[in-house]
Image 1 (cartoon, helix red, strand yellow):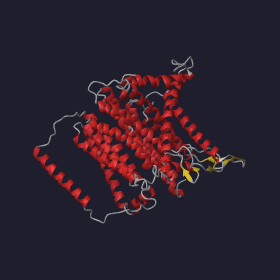
Image 2 (cartoon, chains in turn brown, green; image 1 turned 180 degrees about the vertical axis):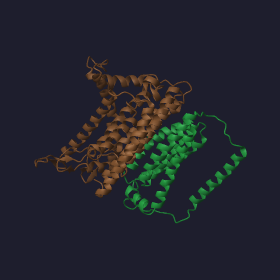
Image 3 (cartoon, chains in turn red, brown; image 1 turned 90 degrees about the horizontal axis):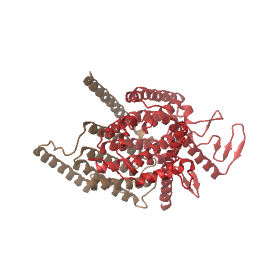
Image 4 (tube, helix red, strand yellow; image 1 turned 135 degrees about the vertical axis):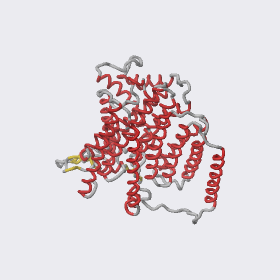
Length: 365
Length: 198
């Protein structure tokens, strides 16, 4: 019993550290990436004995220290308790949402089989959705508790947007659930392990390209990033729902943003790009379609798979950052029309088409 | 109020711990950790349920209700009903309560509005509430059926497969009728809203 609890605790710790360090690294990637895109140097002010380490010193050491030591300003007549609670409520669900995403195959230690997934859950997909649906409270609370009209506008925009896009996201996932016939994320990744026609990896995007596009759009809308960043809307609302935040609380909102990017990237990887699967890598090594084989020790296979998962997640994080610095912001009516009249009917049609195909071929893929 | 808030914070931390232990699929019967989790969850749930009616500020009341619903989901998890727990969070804590908060924010309700209830009504409500409470206490003390004892959970209990089988065989009619009812409600809401706009 004690060992089981220990293993669960270690896995939980790994996931928390993974999300938090991803959030930090993404902060650096975003700032350096935006500088790259806008043809400037960026994030190079701070250095230790002249070593700026490509802005790492600035974004990973100087900035957090600055946030930690800054004065925490509370607006007049703000709700002190809710104002403090909002950033915590914002960050908590994002971090725990990652817990159901598998980052590797099951490994065997002694007689024990350990799933490389913090919580192996029969309804894992629903768990992630449930946690993501709780994310709206941080936005609402931040907007409300600041007692400021710009914050309130941001909070209201945020909650309306997140409710609207949650539906399209859920329906695009329904199509994936029908395709794989399971809600267990680990099982979904396993189902993407075989090859179509002996050479093409059976990744989710090949079955459901439309669901992938819908999921990506709604995922970015849920994480409130450009082109869906109206709750923040710095040209109209200063900083939207976290206008009245400073210091460590502001940093927490900032980190939530990046943690959400990581969760969306993790979900895209798991649902549509084979999760931890490496093409042609089976449990005992590579088996190429031509007939060649390269046997690899089990431990190396697992390490390769975990590395593949991380690489894919980072790629999709980069894609989201690239989008942020490329696209303009939607107008509010465009946002609502796109969500309700564009994505929602499209995802419903996709569910219907998927159901028809699944019924016709007599079972999930 | 501050105490309640601190309770919420502590609860969030405890829940994240308890969530890992309980959802991690670890059999806690041997450790009796299950009892600890239940005691924490139940007492916090009573606290937050009290918060719903004690708080003056409508937004805090609504938030207490969110916490209560979330803790109810934790209770479902500890009863092996994972699917029900997730639906509880998605539907109630994640969607319906957001709409509550949305309305409160839009109407800009502030605290300390005097309650619009006549004293007689308040007394009557108190009387009925007390009756219900005493009844609940009575049934806890003297359960109708035999005491359940150490019932074993059948394999696959609470999984989505089992629930779907029940839903689409034994309760198919109720399921379909409910979905039609919901559809009618949606159409009705749209009709009412459109009439106001026109």
